[in-house]
Image (cartoon, rainbow over all chains, first blue to last red; front, side):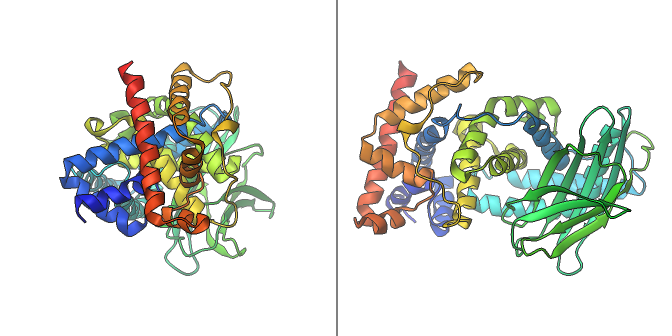
Length: 261
Length: 173
């Protein structure tokens, strides 16, 4: 694609509605063409004005901040503490995180490119699959340091297909209980996904609904619950057709052994 | 951004304090429900962490980068759900006046955006809003309105350039 063709697509590119083939070609071109890159950046900034024009129209709920922090921390932070059998896994995580970052630095795509997004989504899925329990252990270790807090974690497995997942519940005496769920490879499943958790007596709490997944079929969701999760350990994720796509049983988090190096 | 990469609470909260509201309100308007807006907000901040290492401040502002991530994710989702929950067209005239308890920077950013958009004609404004808020492509608008594709693209480009100029003039002043 030459400069003229790229300039023809840039308005739609900036407004987020360019056809995917064009997006890939534009992103490739602007890597090496400073003039078109500047035009792309300027038009994207102009497009952002429309988003800002809405700012102030409705405030996010107060609980959302903690949900966001939990979700980012769940994806971002490697475990700080040793966990049974975790040393080798932790090394693997470090290498994977390093690989993702090294692969990312220097690519310098114009903002949030979709080609990059697809690639990172795939990497994220791989990372998520291999680190889910460690992330949860990290969260658990943090939460476990608080008084009156109990943490349960578990792997979610699929009866068929490649889907994977993990879940953690954080039970706090002085605050609302929380639940975090990580799912992967559910792109083929009908949305929304419904997450529920049951106790040994068969009582069920409908925890929340996952209405969208990233392009690789994964996501991380955090919820704060009015009901106590004490005694609730059986997690089920159903697809939009009501079929069970993932399930697992949570167990109490093993005590932290020692700080990681 | 380094703090965000490390999953540092304070960094995440600082970024959230600055950008959660515009991201959430964008989700609210584009996706049409509070639940979807909350999910979008979570997804945007998780994505920001994943892409944080690639953010280059020499190539643009953090606000543009983050809002572009938010808009792309919202549009992707909107287009997947096209025909089911496509929101009604948002007109700038319907946009709210300044709300209480919104931080000053955000209000300034919003006022600047509204002034820039005010530089457009009604037709230009409606055209851009149909793409930005409804995810309509130039081809879809061309077919809907019965005007040549090239004309739609030219008008979109012209409108964005007007907004860009208005932004630049504001910065110069």
